[in-house]
Image (cartoon, rainbow, N blue to C red; front, side, top):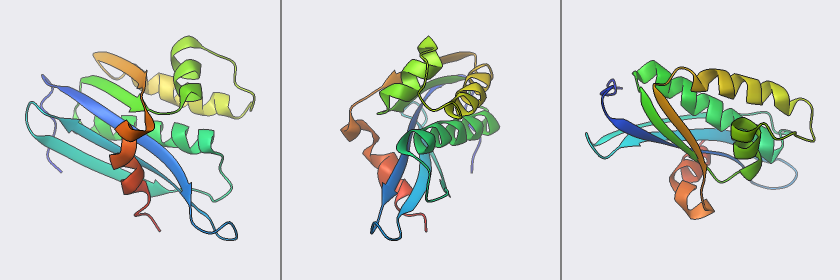
Length: 139
């Protein structure tokens, strides 16, 4: 995987997803890092425990993508997810119903500091289709 050009702005699109039969569901996280400025694209994905909630898998996808972007040398990043709870918890400190989600929020917010500029946006589901499709290739 080639290193990112630190002067360019990158977009990180993330999704945690569940699919498959109810008796044996699959859960995975995926992230796509891209920049139109230099035709750059990097993809990462990982399998997750089957009993993870949607919110947990979306937080994991964000953390996975942030860590990958940092390793690639990205300095300017706009991250996108369709999960409003992830955005509200990370950007606005909204309380979460599940106490263990605070750990995920903490890791994500710590990683925000690795970037010169960072923004987290909630987007429509159609905007994250590439990450969702990538996540479904795990397993």
